Image (cartoon, rainbow, N blue to C red; front, side):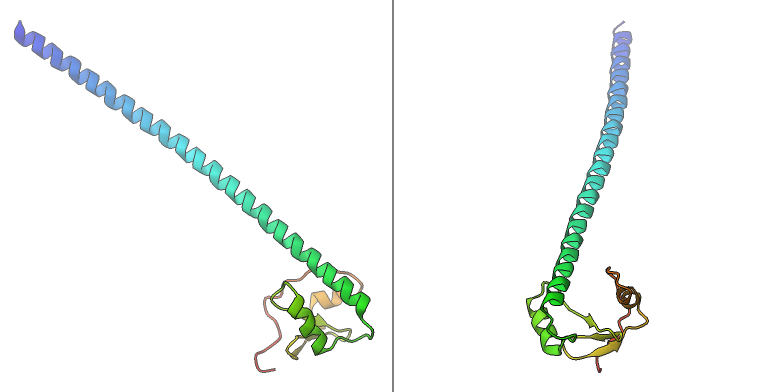
Length: 145
């Protein structure tokens, strides 16, 4: 009888141990899913906030460009912008560089370099009286001109 009781106790302990293992596995699986979902939400919120920040920065830059263009237009005494004027504007500007495109379709840099721009979309749109912003990935300026 003592052996049967010991065998029964061992069986109960094994069943209890198996139940504990199953419950622990279930708990860790559920916890992993919750953490994964929480991380997805965090990543989505972070991406959204970053996008809003970038949009704000770009909107501010666009407003600055519009403001600069307005004041340059109002302060011009001749239909020309000289290299000195570009250098002064660039010194006070919050932008890294400044390029001016004249009526003939020539880009002027503050360091005196020039490049053709009459085939560029921003020139064609500007000559028609439209405003906008263009991103140029292949500038015509070279280091030796």
